[in-house]
Image (tube, rainbow, N blue to C red):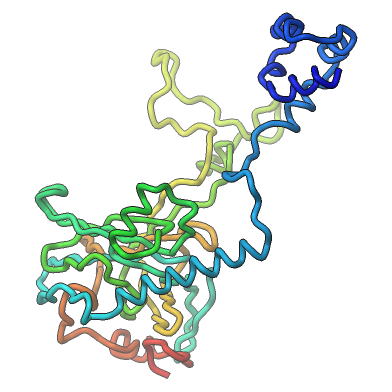
Length: 359
């Protein structure tokens, strides 16, 4: 019996379909009583579960001390890589071109921290979202000819992630670039006079108070929802003969159409899709902690990564300060403080340390 059990453990595929493999199991050499017990009960389920492949990548498990040592070693290597990119003597940046009307520059990738209120000196309250720029770097430059023939493209990565979560092909790209791997990568369309050399870090000072930005993030997933929650339908009467139709959509078309039109609002999965909030004003910039304060709400949950873009739109007062950092020279009429951008309404009661604003 012991030898038979060992053979079963070494061949877990025998337990996928007991009835189909019974003849094969008997051929391996066995005790009929053990076979009858095995295939008449659910014991094969237990054995299959206990001796399945480990869910981890490695068979050996690191101790807490070894795991902490590996994390510390990786963080030190990442800091060394980032420090090597901060020296302009070793890696000379590309030339800065003058700003021109219609110029479009690169954006950043930021981490959503949450929301808070802010008050101006005249007592007005504004609800803002805090977005922190963490380890944001330009990864790749694609010329206009190689991209879409209209605008050049800059690939930007944000928030350093563990190298154990990336495949070897991706790690090779970052190793050649001299940067640690990034959690989120996005493409920004820029004009030829706003290109930046790959490896250039981007900070919160990339923006100024008074600018308008587009923020793109993945909305919070709500799961499968009905039409009232998903699309805001009114619903049907609660009484007067209604039976099990209170939250139903009702008729979706006429009878002679005999089909469901594409785009019909029906129940389904809600959320977990990319959405963009257009024209959010930058109220404040904290250069010490790399935090950008934008007006209103931003798609996504806390600790989610979002994309900030300064691409101008027709008919909206976008980018009143226009291209103030990285790739383009500063315009002479660009405000450097909140008071210059908004007058008395933009001067804060307390700007805080490292913030671009007036006390």
